[in-house]
Image (cartoon, rainbow, N blue to C red; front, side, top):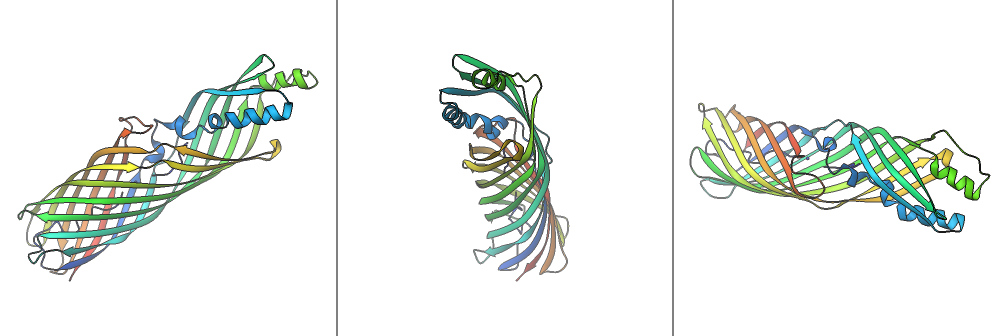
Length: 340
């Protein structure tokens, strides 16, 4: 399960309106931001294969305990999750400064921060073969996890805008996203009893268990991710009158997320299990559109309000996920702009 951890800041061209009369502006902003990272379906087994990564350790532990070579092999992993998308109320602002006397070129820096809470539900089934003294036990195992996920998000963006004329401008910039996530909840493990019966016959009292094995406990995961992107495109805007303007930003982006190392803790008191794992989730490179549609109203020559809808789609071109399983970020962004 990828607890992960990954999302989008505001469009940082703060003044796509008519020629600015100010050298710089400040814009406190609020962004209601939606991120579907927890709902993606491909690459799921790679991100949650805790059992498969523990095969070597479990083989060594069993071999040491019973004093004979024992091999554990996990395969046939199938995973599924029913999770809510993350909804972030992001707060922050943008600072815009003109770079030339005519204010045709502007540089904008924006920062947003917020916290999202969501429900997580996941199930994983896999087969496990345990070979000892010429015998192989084949078991089917199911793991259930249900709990809550909390993610803190920081978005930083730097954008340059160069106005070509009264209706068009060129835009380019870079963006950094940091996500710090933690999930915890209930864990349940159900398995057939073939391996247990083999060990009982070889090393125990030869009693056989015909029922399923069932254990319950708790889990905790922690993960941090850092996402870097570059984007470029153009803006078109139309003045309705002297105080009202609508605009459209169309950009293309390239985004890179390095490998993520998440920490997984499993506690099953009745079975004496207190397990810590570090899981490496492969990074991802993605491309896609970054589209913004907005409206600006100027109350005075120095104060205005801006409302915009922004949507960014991340189509993977490398990493464990498929191209047709994109990450989608979108939401409504609003703020006041004070020109100086």
